[in-house]
Length: 81
Image 1 (cartoon, helix red, strand yellow):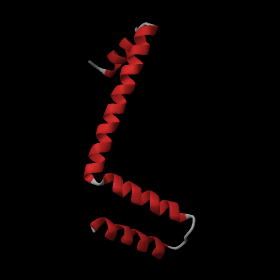
Image 2 (cartoon, one colour):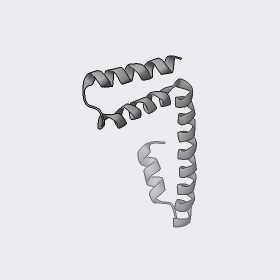
Image 3 (cartoon, helix red, strand yellow):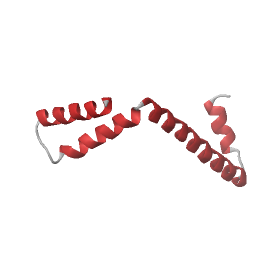
Image 4 (cartoon, helix red, strand yellow):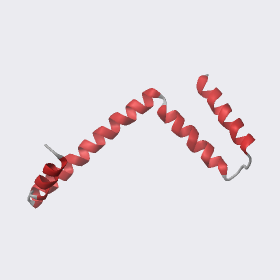
């Protein structure tokens, strides 16, 4: 089935069917998001995102590349412990 066929089928749903489809799709998205979150947590990706957000949060407080490089190096060392 192609995307176009799926789109066409959705446009042909009744209001009740469309509501049921929306409900199913929200559950589907939540499950997919949860699975991706677990994979990211297991692989350490979330740690990298948290580190990046931490560093970005400091951007307004501190100026200068050397400081940012030092902070990044420190966070990297913390991850390795």
